[in-house]
Image (cartoon, rainbow, N blue to C red; front, side, top):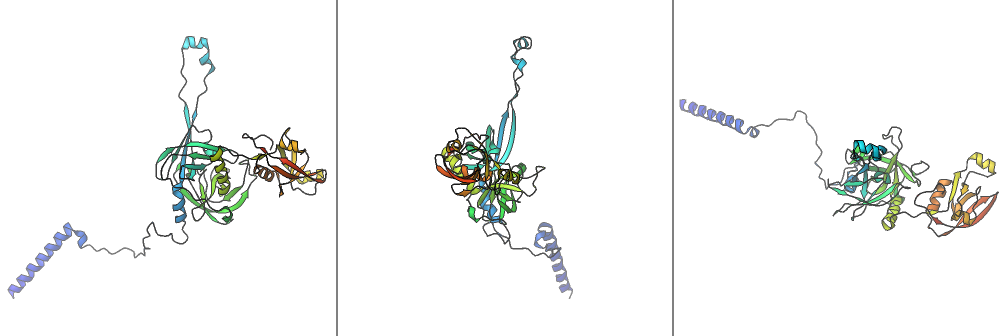
Length: 383
Protein backbone atom coordinates (compact mmCIF):
# COMPACT_ATOMS: atom_id res chain seq x y z
CA UNK A 1 0.00 0.00 0.00
CA UNK A 2 2.84 2.33 0.88
CA UNK A 3 4.44 1.58 -2.47
CA UNK A 4 1.25 2.44 -4.43
CA UNK A 5 0.91 5.73 -2.57
CA UNK A 6 4.50 6.61 -3.41
CA UNK A 7 3.91 5.92 -7.13
CA UNK A 8 0.75 8.09 -7.12
CA UNK A 9 2.54 10.98 -5.39
CA UNK A 10 5.42 10.86 -7.87
CA UNK A 11 2.98 10.81 -10.82
CA UNK A 12 1.10 13.89 -9.54
CA UNK A 13 4.37 15.74 -8.92
CA UNK A 14 5.59 15.05 -12.47
CA UNK A 15 2.23 16.13 -13.98
CA UNK A 16 2.25 19.40 -11.99
CA UNK A 17 5.84 20.05 -13.13
CA UNK A 18 4.92 19.44 -16.77
CA UNK A 19 1.93 21.83 -16.52
CA UNK A 20 4.16 24.49 -14.93
CA UNK A 21 6.75 24.24 -17.71
CA UNK A 22 4.15 24.27 -20.52
CA UNK A 23 2.21 27.14 -18.91
CA UNK A 24 5.43 29.17 -18.68
CA UNK A 25 6.92 28.47 -22.11
CA UNK A 26 3.80 27.76 -24.26
CA UNK A 27 0.76 29.23 -22.50
CA UNK A 28 -1.27 29.18 -25.74
CA UNK A 29 -1.24 25.36 -25.63
CA UNK A 30 -3.39 25.27 -22.55
CA UNK A 31 -5.13 28.66 -22.76
CA UNK A 32 -8.73 28.34 -23.95
CA UNK A 33 -10.47 31.64 -23.22
CA UNK A 34 -14.19 31.92 -23.70
CA UNK A 35 -15.53 35.03 -25.56
CA UNK A 36 -16.88 37.79 -23.37
CA UNK A 37 -19.96 38.14 -25.62
CA UNK A 38 -21.24 35.58 -28.09
CA UNK A 39 -21.19 37.28 -31.53
CA UNK A 40 -22.30 36.18 -34.97
CA UNK A 41 -19.85 36.94 -37.76
CA UNK A 42 -20.67 37.05 -41.45
CA UNK A 43 -18.54 34.84 -43.72
CA UNK A 44 -15.45 36.64 -44.96
CA UNK A 45 -15.91 37.99 -48.50
CA UNK A 46 -13.03 37.94 -50.93
CA UNK A 47 -12.29 40.78 -53.35
CA UNK A 48 -13.29 38.76 -56.38
CA UNK A 49 -16.73 37.87 -55.07
CA UNK A 50 -19.82 39.90 -56.08
CA UNK A 51 -20.91 42.72 -53.77
CA UNK A 52 -23.78 42.08 -51.37
CA UNK A 53 -27.23 43.44 -52.13
CA UNK A 54 -27.40 47.22 -51.65
CA UNK A 55 -23.65 47.72 -52.11
CA UNK A 56 -22.11 49.76 -54.93
CA UNK A 57 -18.66 48.31 -54.41
CA UNK A 58 -18.52 46.76 -57.88
CA UNK A 59 -19.36 50.11 -59.51
CA UNK A 60 -16.71 51.90 -57.46
CA UNK A 61 -14.16 49.16 -58.16
CA UNK A 62 -14.77 49.50 -61.91
CA UNK A 63 -14.53 53.30 -62.03
CA UNK A 64 -12.00 54.26 -59.34
CA UNK A 65 -8.80 53.33 -61.21
CA UNK A 66 -9.67 55.62 -64.15
CA UNK A 67 -10.32 58.74 -62.02
CA UNK A 68 -7.19 60.83 -61.47
CA UNK A 69 -6.10 63.76 -59.33
CA UNK A 70 -4.95 66.89 -61.18
CA UNK A 71 -2.53 69.35 -59.56
CA UNK A 72 -1.83 72.65 -61.32
CA UNK A 73 0.70 75.38 -60.73
CA UNK A 74 0.57 78.93 -62.00
CA UNK A 75 3.48 81.35 -61.82
CA UNK A 76 2.59 84.77 -60.43
CA UNK A 77 5.28 87.20 -61.45
CA UNK A 78 5.73 90.29 -59.31
CA UNK A 79 5.16 93.60 -61.08
CA UNK A 80 8.41 95.51 -61.61
CA UNK A 81 8.43 98.90 -59.87
CA UNK A 82 8.91 101.83 -62.32
CA UNK A 83 11.74 103.30 -60.19
CA UNK A 84 13.88 100.25 -60.96
CA UNK A 85 14.18 101.50 -64.56
CA UNK A 86 14.87 105.13 -63.60
CA UNK A 87 18.55 106.07 -64.42
CA UNK A 88 18.90 108.41 -61.39
CA UNK A 89 17.54 105.78 -59.00
CA UNK A 90 19.88 103.14 -60.46
CA UNK A 91 22.84 105.59 -60.18
CA UNK A 92 22.40 105.98 -56.42
CA UNK A 93 21.02 102.56 -55.48
CA UNK A 94 22.42 100.27 -58.21
CA UNK A 95 20.57 97.58 -60.12
CA UNK A 96 17.92 95.80 -58.15
CA UNK A 97 16.85 92.27 -59.04
CA UNK A 98 13.20 91.35 -59.03
CA UNK A 99 12.02 89.01 -56.31
CA UNK A 100 11.39 85.34 -57.04
CA UNK A 101 8.18 84.50 -58.83
CA UNK A 102 5.45 83.23 -56.57
CA UNK A 103 3.41 80.16 -57.42
CA UNK A 104 -0.29 79.58 -57.09
CA UNK A 105 -1.48 75.97 -56.94
CA UNK A 106 -4.84 74.35 -57.56
CA UNK A 107 -6.37 70.93 -57.66
CA UNK A 108 -9.13 69.03 -59.40
CA UNK A 109 -9.98 65.68 -60.90
CA UNK A 110 -10.09 64.04 -64.30
CA UNK A 111 -11.12 60.83 -66.05
CA UNK A 112 -8.91 58.61 -68.24
CA UNK A 113 -10.94 57.93 -71.37
CA UNK A 114 -8.48 56.05 -73.60
CA UNK A 115 -5.44 53.77 -73.24
CA UNK A 116 -3.23 56.32 -75.04
CA UNK A 117 -3.51 58.72 -72.13
CA UNK A 118 -6.33 61.12 -72.99
CA UNK A 119 -7.93 62.62 -69.87
CA UNK A 120 -11.22 64.51 -69.79
CA UNK A 121 -11.57 67.30 -67.19
CA UNK A 122 -13.01 70.78 -66.69
CA UNK A 123 -11.48 73.81 -68.37
CA UNK A 124 -11.54 75.79 -65.13
CA UNK A 125 -9.36 73.12 -63.49
CA UNK A 126 -6.42 73.77 -65.86
CA UNK A 127 -7.13 77.38 -66.92
CA UNK A 128 -3.93 79.51 -66.96
CA UNK A 129 -1.85 76.67 -65.48
CA UNK A 130 1.88 76.68 -66.24
CA UNK A 131 2.40 73.14 -65.03
CA UNK A 132 -0.08 70.24 -64.78
CA UNK A 133 0.66 67.04 -62.84
CA UNK A 134 -1.66 64.03 -62.89
CA UNK A 135 -1.62 61.52 -60.05
CA UNK A 136 -2.99 58.07 -60.87
CA UNK A 137 -4.83 55.68 -58.60
CA UNK A 138 -1.65 53.59 -58.19
CA UNK A 139 0.21 56.59 -56.72
CA UNK A 140 2.37 57.42 -59.75
CA UNK A 141 2.50 61.00 -61.04
CA UNK A 142 2.88 62.14 -64.65
CA UNK A 143 3.28 65.50 -66.35
CA UNK A 144 0.33 66.32 -68.59
CA UNK A 145 0.00 68.47 -71.68
CA UNK A 146 -3.14 70.25 -72.84
CA UNK A 147 -4.52 68.88 -76.11
CA UNK A 148 -7.25 71.50 -76.31
CA UNK A 149 -10.11 73.10 -74.43
CA UNK A 150 -13.59 74.52 -74.83
CA UNK A 151 -14.28 77.28 -72.29
CA UNK A 152 -17.91 77.66 -73.41
CA UNK A 153 -18.73 74.14 -72.21
CA UNK A 154 -16.02 74.14 -69.48
CA UNK A 155 -14.25 71.06 -70.84
CA UNK A 156 -10.60 70.31 -71.57
CA UNK A 157 -8.59 67.34 -72.79
CA UNK A 158 -5.17 66.44 -71.38
CA UNK A 159 -2.74 63.69 -72.29
CA UNK A 160 -0.12 61.80 -70.31
CA UNK A 161 2.47 59.24 -71.41
CA UNK A 162 2.07 56.00 -69.48
CA UNK A 163 1.52 52.30 -70.14
CA UNK A 164 -1.43 50.07 -69.27
CA UNK A 165 -3.73 52.89 -68.24
CA UNK A 166 -7.15 51.98 -66.84
CA UNK A 167 -9.97 53.61 -68.80
CA UNK A 168 -13.58 54.47 -67.99
CA UNK A 169 -16.52 52.93 -69.86
CA UNK A 170 -19.03 55.42 -71.27
CA UNK A 171 -22.64 54.83 -70.29
CA UNK A 172 -25.69 55.09 -72.55
CA UNK A 173 -27.16 58.60 -72.48
CA UNK A 174 -30.71 57.46 -73.10
CA UNK A 175 -30.53 55.02 -70.19
CA UNK A 176 -30.25 57.70 -67.49
CA UNK A 177 -33.39 58.91 -65.72
CA UNK A 178 -34.46 60.99 -62.76
CA UNK A 179 -34.22 58.89 -59.60
CA UNK A 180 -31.35 56.69 -60.80
CA UNK A 181 -28.56 56.12 -58.29
CA UNK A 182 -25.22 57.70 -59.24
CA UNK A 183 -21.76 57.90 -57.65
CA UNK A 184 -19.52 60.98 -57.75
CA UNK A 185 -15.79 60.22 -57.72
CA UNK A 186 -13.06 62.81 -57.27
CA UNK A 187 -10.55 64.42 -54.95
CA UNK A 188 -12.54 66.87 -52.76
CA UNK A 189 -10.43 69.42 -50.86
CA UNK A 190 -7.35 67.35 -51.74
CA UNK A 191 -8.09 64.72 -49.08
CA UNK A 192 -7.74 61.87 -51.60
CA UNK A 193 -9.96 59.83 -53.83
CA UNK A 194 -13.52 59.83 -52.51
CA UNK A 195 -16.81 58.24 -53.57
CA UNK A 196 -20.17 59.80 -52.70
CA UNK A 197 -23.63 58.54 -53.56
CA UNK A 198 -26.88 60.20 -54.58
CA UNK A 199 -29.55 60.14 -57.23
CA UNK A 200 -30.21 61.99 -60.46
CA UNK A 201 -32.33 64.92 -59.30
CA UNK A 202 -33.06 66.41 -62.73
CA UNK A 203 -31.94 66.33 -66.35
CA UNK A 204 -31.43 69.10 -68.89
CA UNK A 205 -30.77 71.88 -66.37
CA UNK A 206 -29.98 75.21 -68.08
CA UNK A 207 -30.32 78.98 -67.53
CA UNK A 208 -27.90 78.68 -64.60
CA UNK A 209 -25.30 81.17 -65.83
CA UNK A 210 -22.46 78.67 -65.33
CA UNK A 211 -21.48 78.03 -68.97
CA UNK A 212 -22.49 79.41 -72.34
CA UNK A 213 -23.86 76.00 -73.32
CA UNK A 214 -25.73 74.26 -70.51
CA UNK A 215 -27.47 70.90 -70.40
CA UNK A 216 -26.61 69.65 -66.93
CA UNK A 217 -27.39 66.54 -64.96
CA UNK A 218 -28.41 67.64 -61.47
CA UNK A 219 -27.54 65.31 -58.59
CA UNK A 220 -27.53 65.33 -54.80
CA UNK A 221 -24.37 63.20 -54.64
CA UNK A 222 -21.89 65.31 -52.66
CA UNK A 223 -19.67 67.36 -55.00
CA UNK A 224 -17.14 69.65 -53.33
CA UNK A 225 -14.16 71.79 -54.44
CA UNK A 226 -11.61 69.41 -55.95
CA UNK A 227 -14.31 67.15 -57.43
CA UNK A 228 -14.42 69.26 -60.60
CA UNK A 229 -13.56 67.18 -63.65
CA UNK A 230 -14.23 63.91 -61.82
CA UNK A 231 -16.59 61.14 -62.82
CA UNK A 232 -20.30 60.75 -62.24
CA UNK A 233 -21.01 57.04 -62.79
CA UNK A 234 -24.05 54.76 -62.73
CA UNK A 235 -24.51 51.63 -60.60
CA UNK A 236 -22.44 49.66 -63.12
CA UNK A 237 -19.49 52.05 -62.94
CA UNK A 238 -20.15 53.54 -66.40
CA UNK A 239 -19.49 57.23 -66.98
CA UNK A 240 -22.67 59.29 -67.24
CA UNK A 241 -21.28 62.78 -66.51
CA UNK A 242 -18.32 65.02 -65.71
CA UNK A 243 -18.76 66.75 -62.34
CA UNK A 244 -18.57 70.48 -62.94
CA UNK A 245 -20.24 72.78 -60.43
CA UNK A 246 -22.30 73.08 -57.26
CA UNK A 247 -24.98 75.46 -56.11
CA UNK A 248 -23.80 76.85 -52.81
CA UNK A 249 -23.83 80.10 -50.86
CA UNK A 250 -21.01 79.00 -48.56
CA UNK A 251 -18.73 76.98 -50.85
CA UNK A 252 -19.83 73.68 -49.27
CA UNK A 253 -22.16 71.03 -50.61
CA UNK A 254 -25.89 71.72 -50.29
CA UNK A 255 -27.09 68.71 -52.23
CA UNK A 256 -27.29 70.49 -55.60
CA UNK A 257 -24.49 69.52 -57.96
CA UNK A 258 -24.21 69.66 -61.73
CA UNK A 259 -22.46 67.40 -64.22
CA UNK A 260 -21.98 67.65 -67.98
CA UNK A 261 -23.65 64.64 -69.66
CA UNK A 262 -21.15 62.06 -70.90
CA UNK A 263 -22.59 62.13 -74.42
CA UNK A 264 -22.01 65.90 -74.73
CA UNK A 265 -18.55 65.61 -73.18
CA UNK A 266 -17.62 62.82 -75.57
CA UNK A 267 -18.69 64.77 -78.65
CA UNK A 268 -16.71 67.83 -77.58
CA UNK A 269 -13.71 65.70 -76.61
CA UNK A 270 -13.59 64.01 -80.01
CA UNK A 271 -13.63 67.38 -81.79
CA UNK A 272 -10.83 68.67 -79.56
CA UNK A 273 -8.69 65.57 -80.21
CA UNK A 274 -9.27 65.74 -83.96
CA UNK A 275 -8.84 69.46 -84.53
CA UNK A 276 -7.79 71.04 -81.23
CA UNK A 277 -10.99 73.07 -80.97
CA UNK A 278 -14.78 72.82 -81.14
CA UNK A 279 -16.64 74.04 -84.22
CA UNK A 280 -20.13 75.45 -83.69
CA UNK A 281 -22.69 77.19 -85.84
CA UNK A 282 -23.29 80.95 -85.55
CA UNK A 283 -25.53 83.52 -87.24
CA UNK A 284 -24.69 86.76 -85.39
CA UNK A 285 -27.82 87.81 -83.54
CA UNK A 286 -28.60 89.01 -80.05
CA UNK A 287 -31.78 87.54 -78.60
CA UNK A 288 -33.78 88.06 -75.46
CA UNK A 289 -36.52 86.17 -73.67
CA UNK A 290 -40.12 87.18 -74.36
CA UNK A 291 -41.79 88.25 -71.14
CA UNK A 292 -45.58 88.60 -70.87
CA UNK A 293 -45.13 92.39 -70.96
CA UNK A 294 -43.08 92.20 -74.17
CA UNK A 295 -45.58 89.83 -75.73
CA UNK A 296 -48.37 92.27 -74.98
CA UNK A 297 -46.49 95.30 -76.29
CA UNK A 298 -45.53 93.49 -79.53
CA UNK A 299 -48.99 92.00 -79.95
CA UNK A 300 -47.69 88.43 -79.77
CA UNK A 301 -50.06 85.55 -79.06
CA UNK A 302 -47.71 83.92 -76.52
CA UNK A 303 -44.18 84.05 -75.05
CA UNK A 304 -42.78 81.21 -77.18
CA UNK A 305 -39.70 81.94 -79.26
CA UNK A 306 -36.71 84.26 -79.03
CA UNK A 307 -37.01 87.98 -79.69
CA UNK A 308 -34.23 89.22 -82.00
CA UNK A 309 -32.93 92.32 -80.23
CA UNK A 310 -29.95 92.97 -82.50
CA UNK A 311 -28.31 91.74 -85.71
CA UNK A 312 -24.57 91.99 -86.32
CA UNK A 313 -23.71 93.79 -89.54
CA UNK A 314 -22.50 91.50 -92.37
CA UNK A 315 -23.33 88.44 -90.30
CA UNK A 316 -25.17 85.38 -91.72
CA UNK A 317 -28.39 86.63 -90.14
CA UNK A 318 -27.96 90.06 -91.73
CA UNK A 319 -27.27 88.49 -95.13
CA UNK A 320 -30.41 86.33 -94.82
CA UNK A 321 -32.66 89.31 -94.01
CA UNK A 322 -33.32 88.75 -90.31
CA UNK A 323 -34.22 92.04 -88.60
CA UNK A 324 -34.40 93.33 -85.03
CA UNK A 325 -37.93 92.82 -83.73
CA UNK A 326 -38.37 89.45 -85.47
CA UNK A 327 -39.33 86.50 -83.29
CA UNK A 328 -37.46 83.29 -84.08
CA UNK A 329 -39.89 80.37 -83.81
CA UNK A 330 -38.03 77.40 -85.30
CA UNK A 331 -34.62 76.35 -86.64
CA UNK A 332 -34.59 73.50 -89.17
CA UNK A 333 -38.09 72.56 -88.05
CA UNK A 334 -37.17 72.42 -84.34
CA UNK A 335 -39.16 74.73 -82.07
CA UNK A 336 -37.35 77.58 -80.31
CA UNK A 337 -38.78 78.06 -76.81
CA UNK A 338 -36.32 80.67 -75.58
CA UNK A 339 -32.88 82.20 -76.35
CA UNK A 340 -31.00 79.32 -74.66
CA UNK A 341 -32.70 76.76 -76.90
CA UNK A 342 -31.97 78.98 -79.90
CA UNK A 343 -28.31 79.13 -78.94
CA UNK A 344 -28.07 75.34 -78.61
CA UNK A 345 -29.89 74.64 -81.88
CA UNK A 346 -27.72 77.04 -83.89
CA UNK A 347 -24.49 75.86 -82.24
CA UNK A 348 -25.28 72.27 -83.24
CA UNK A 349 -25.41 73.23 -86.94
CA UNK A 350 -22.42 72.90 -89.26
CA UNK A 351 -20.91 76.01 -90.85
CA UNK A 352 -21.86 76.59 -94.52
CA UNK A 353 -25.10 74.64 -94.15
CA UNK A 354 -28.22 76.37 -95.48
CA UNK A 355 -30.96 76.01 -92.89
CA UNK A 356 -34.60 77.19 -92.95
CA UNK A 357 -35.58 79.58 -90.14
CA UNK A 358 -39.21 80.30 -89.28
CA UNK A 359 -39.91 83.75 -87.87
CA UNK A 360 -42.84 85.94 -86.90
CA UNK A 361 -42.66 89.47 -88.33
CA UNK A 362 -45.48 92.00 -87.92
CA UNK A 363 -47.96 89.22 -87.06
CA UNK A 364 -46.97 87.30 -90.21
CA UNK A 365 -45.06 84.01 -90.33
CA UNK A 366 -42.12 84.03 -92.76
CA UNK A 367 -39.48 81.49 -93.80
CA UNK A 368 -35.87 82.52 -94.44
CA UNK A 369 -32.90 80.40 -95.48
CA UNK A 370 -29.73 81.19 -93.52
CA UNK A 371 -26.21 80.11 -94.44
CA UNK A 372 -24.68 79.15 -91.11
CA UNK A 373 -21.36 80.72 -90.13
CA UNK A 374 -18.63 79.49 -87.79
CA UNK A 375 -18.84 80.62 -84.19
CA UNK A 376 -15.73 82.66 -83.24
CA UNK A 377 -13.37 81.12 -80.71
CA UNK A 378 -13.76 84.18 -78.50
CA UNK A 379 -17.51 84.53 -78.00
CA UNK A 380 -18.84 87.88 -79.24
CA UNK A 381 -21.38 89.85 -77.29
CA UNK A 382 -23.98 88.84 -79.83
CA UNK A 383 -24.95 85.29 -80.70
